[in-house]
Amino acid sequence: MYRIGLIGCGYMGQAHLRDCCSRENISIYAVCDSDMQKAEETAERYHAVRAYADAGKLIEDPLVDIVIIATYPSSHLALLKKCISQGRHVLCEKPIACNPEDGMEFVRTVKKNPQCKVLVGHILRYNNTYIRVKEMIGEGVIGKPVVMRMTQNHNTLGNWEKYRRLIEETSPIIDCGVHYVDVMRWFTGEEVVNVDGTGAVTEKDLSEGRYNYGIINVTLSGGSVGFYEAGWGNSLETNNEKEFIGPAGRIKITYQKDRMSHREDGNLVSVYKYVDGTTEYINIPFGEKPTGTELEYLIEMIERNVPAKPAIEDVFRSFEIVCEADERIREKMALTGAADR
Image (cartoon, rainbow, N blue to C red; front, side, top):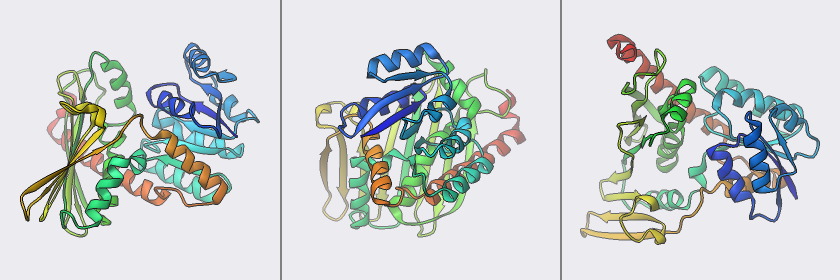
């Protein structure tokens, strides 16, 4: 039985706890949040033994085996180092940091301490829908090169302040872009050889140099190309476009929540085959985010010494690419004065 200590009782922290509840080899032992009332309420909801407002005290608790870090990225490096100093295994949410320097230090820390197993939460690697699409692309269903079109825009639905605080930490392009750059490299087996980006400010209460909408464009070594569009704002329409196009056809993912009908069937994968003009529809069951599958994999790393998935080098490469795109976006905005409007 592994005793879990969770730091950060927000959206992703709650997702981790909901999935932990049903697993026989996992016990939710302690939770932590800077808001002690939230920590206590979360502990009561999930029957945790202890609630903390101080992350250091949770990490130092000798009964904690695995720490799940579900906080803002600026805290990830310091929390990782504290966990390793206490011999804790770690599942850390992405992105690993707010800047490339801290990201590299995160990687160095992981590599120097192989006795502590560390898994970074690239959750799409554990998502059955993405796993199936990756298999189809690998089987040549749509051929190569691949054009990858991916968007993830959020209307903030009256909760702009939450998103604004996160933008003060990191841009939408970095926050979730690490997932989709990883998907581009993972699906094609190609390396990113060129990256660019553009961005805009549609909300007026952001700090200088911050933006709430951006697009990354990437070129990969095998001729594949892709873009990722991400924006958070009061006037944006929520949109999730995930499409992969090749010379032999195209594959499109429609999330369960975005389906007009048959939502009970889970996510929808539609496969158009150019040769015969047919379209195949595949329903893939989907429930909660597969956070528990990630955690089970971390336990395999602990018990069987299997390598991390994705490897820490792949985690950093995706992070490095989105940071480069973010830098390009900020440079362009500075030239036009867009971020100061």
